[in-house]
Length: 498
Image (cartoon, rainbow, N blue to C red; front, side, top):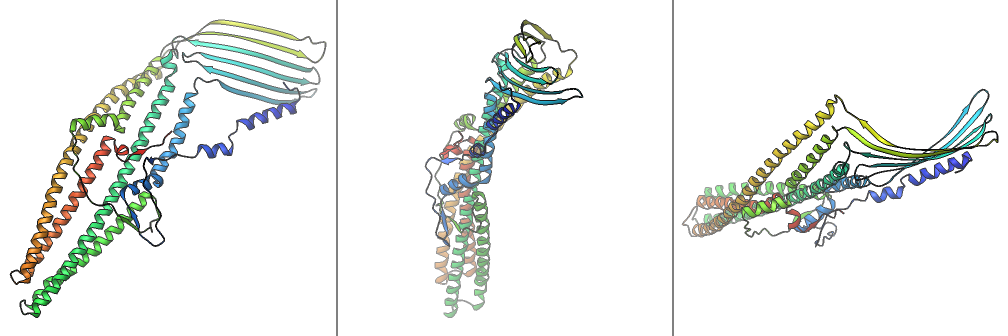
């Protein structure tokens, strides 16, 4: 050991430098990962001023990269994974170095004390505590001279009741691993919910675009009807005031177009916000609006949900957590009876010959006992832990029943939405044909403007009903995936949470 205080201070400064976090380490640890699609679509930036044609898969891929909720969740995972790393070092040797340099000035003397004491300690998986410490000190005094002391101390403590045994000693590590599993499930849930939000927002943009088309087609037909009316008036087959109905309908259709365009812009901004893109980006959803029937047995759906649904799996992990807390709380009420042992050696050397050097050592072994008396706080902790077990059992039962109800409802709703879509599709086709026939009859004077305009209204209502049923069916599929916990699998998304 260095006897010069300057060398001692230099050694302490070096240890502080080595243990301090460097800037490079901080930059490395704060690099969050991100979810990825295993087969990501090509997303190319459109030339300046051109509209971005966006498929649903591209929208999901962009959301995985830029959505702020997802990015925030992955930032939190950095500290969460580090918490687990700290917990997994529970049984690793822990090193600590203490040092001091003290100058004491008295009336008749000046004394300098240089001391360094490294210590290593370790916890065993059975609750055993080991400690080994080394002490080196140099004391200089003008009156006495110098005294160089060095020594080593080793201690071991083995609990027999409180804090004893593998179950109790490893409880913090098990709890940390359970918390990590819950954090992973929470990340899965967050990504799944954001993906679902993006899919629903994309379909709302598709709906708005389709409403613009329906409104535009209605306006075009209204203008064509006005032209037919003018021809019939010119031929003397229609009274001139009858065209007023058509002109009023044409004005209403222009209003529908304006409202639909405004709705489309609102949906565009909502989707851009979810994708964390520039709100000024011109965007068009290019996914075709089609649907295919999906059939799923309710019993099979419940089985899938119990294996993948994050909220349900979280409740299962919470049950393990409360049981572990209860075991620890019960253990803490036991007497603290421990076997203890240790040995130490101390040597003093003096700078002056009239003071002889001194070396001594000792060893000990025995039992230490601590009996808690009247500590109501420990009893309270155990009671609370037992209450938590019963409460968690109720929560799990509630979660299971809610899951079964939601899955059955989602499966039934999916089947109902498909039947409604088929009926709406048939109604729209028949309304289209009825309008064509009514317009043909008008051209030969066998119908009236009122009948054509009424049929026109029926067609628009049927088209909107078909669009609503189609979107509702597609969204029911998406919501079923979310309730089953299969959103990531459906989109082939890897969390990349290593």
